[in-house]
Length: 344
Image (cartoon, rainbow, N blue to C red; front, side):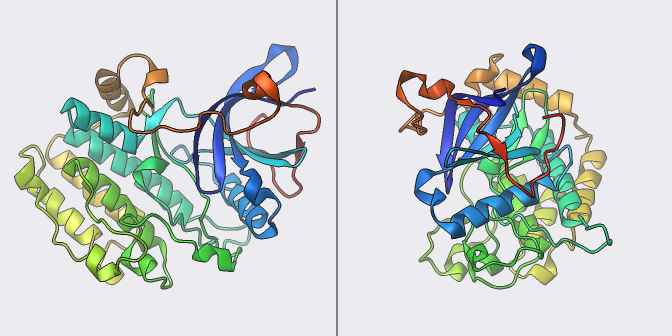
């Protein structure tokens, strides 16, 4: 029987195109899923297929409420797909962009809540061990606002492990860089990195959400000392609702020297939790859901609408007018070595 159906194109980036689809089962069972396709121009190249497989293996090993779950890896003809959890909502980049357009920034409590939720996911990921109790050494390497998803239920989840690295998967292709301005200074210098690099990236995402603009700007040719050399503005001076202690927390989180930062996601999160408790900024998933609905409207299908993004809306060509309802049938076979998670 058919296992998955592609419903519509969502977006594209890096090596993959993203589609909304459905997991099909007996008795009319249907469950929404996201299908990430390895783009055809990369499918025939072994090094990129290897990277795609490794992304699936790393993400499939992670099972945490603040991380997008990976269910399956399938092959349909010559096309490869990672099957992932569908998170109804949109990403932090789009939320911030629409908030600026409406001149309605997210509340201080909401932003600090998003930060703590992502740090909880990173704490789990960084602490992941194998059956022998040895650390897997997983580092995301690409934490950015577009990879932080917020759902209509107020859930916050980290996505996209395309350039994540685990110590078990050493490869020259992990020298692929993250996004300029979000990766840590040591990552920008192509130095050896550890979990503190991800924490720096989270801090940039959260700081920018408060700031309403980019913090570190440059391109791959811009020297890291130039990108990261600007002094941090004072958030508490720009926005009276932000406690001065937040400035202190982020001054440490964004220290250029990794040795001066928080040692772990747990330590970083605890500092933020102390601030929220001290200033009555404790928040919940229900609070975030209500605030996002107020900001973006009651229809979650419109949350991700971003007028600044244009381009091809039907990347996958599976033949004629039915291309956006493509069926991945019996030929959609599991790839050896990827254990499906959940009841797919």
